[in-house]
Image 1 (cartoon, rainbow, N blue to C red):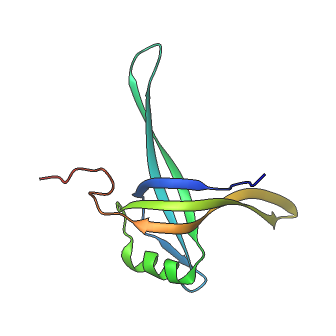
Image 2: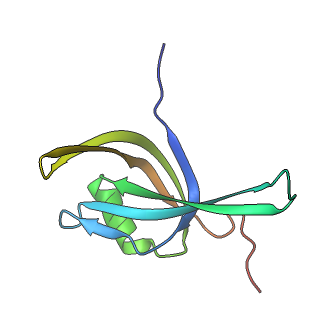
Length: 116
């Protein structure tokens, strides 16, 4: 069986991208929104989830650092990668969301209507 590690994001950049390793790597904070109706109160509830996306491809990182700004709509195809590091003698584990595709969308592509 073939397995897949694919994480797709479509959202908005929450802050200016950050450069690492002299601009060879970029990290971007992306906001995605979800909403649902509470069964008891019947109130509409909205929640924003934040995901930090890492761009390891040097050319893509340069593009992101030059062109992507806070509030920009984006589309990203990513993989989830395990990370680990030692701090004060203790191993810490986590995950990175690493982009293989990171596209800057136009407002029309994002489904957002232009404000008049």
